[in-house]
Image (tube, rainbow, N blue to C red; front, top):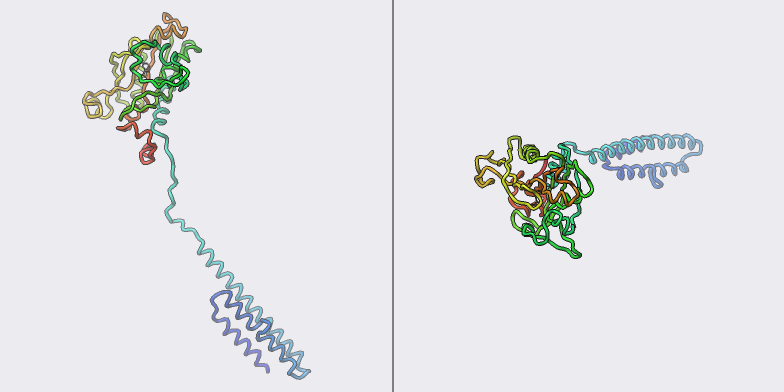
Length: 340
Ligand code: PHE
């Protein structure tokens, strides 16, 4: 009868030799320790043996049961550790895998150039002042020495809105608003949207201008050119020069067109500057006495200069953009090219 215990232990050894997962291990365990398992059958045998042998037989079964339980507990723990290790290995992160690139936006070229311009002129002491986009005829034209019958009104095709209002055609309108409230010395920079009924590769019905205005005692055209030289060097490169050509604007006298030496060829002549070595970048001049008078500033005491440039035009020249429409199409393949 004794070797029955050894037999069962032997069976256990064989049974646990091969199991692939916790389910198979559980099934093996139940074959010995379950309600209909090997040990239950052994307990039933107690009734078949003589009464005096029963206690020691019972103790042996109990000892055997403990042994088997301990064996399975150890195996279960072993399996748990193994499965945990496998799970962790399966979930591990491959730190050598290339990451997914995050999409980082860029500033719009018009915004970039606007910021650069503000930077250049703020460094010279200019303050930023933004006037309204919807203007009255008075601020956009009349006060700028362009009364209703003035032929210079034809220089700018205007969008009129109801109630005597219009979409400003030039940031110059802001000059008047500022000078009505602030007396010299004035050094103001006025960036903003302007609108003209104009539409081709280099003109768009909405674009941005940057206006500059300086009014003080003893301001001359030389001061204007000095500041514009600095502007040209900062925006188009240190070798850039400017030249002034006579022009006409009703609100400045004398008026000039300002050219910058071509940054593409250095002035030798190339397709960008159409062989001339110079590129027209802005309009400017000494503030017309009439304009100062309109704002209650004495033109015998004070003089000033003003300049106005198209920000899109500066951006197109600086970055070699040949069609203004690219700036409003919002194509990220285009916009993404303007990074630091
Ligand atoms: N307002 C002019 C334009 O839009 C530019 C300009 C500004 C010229 C200031 C002279 C002085 O064309």
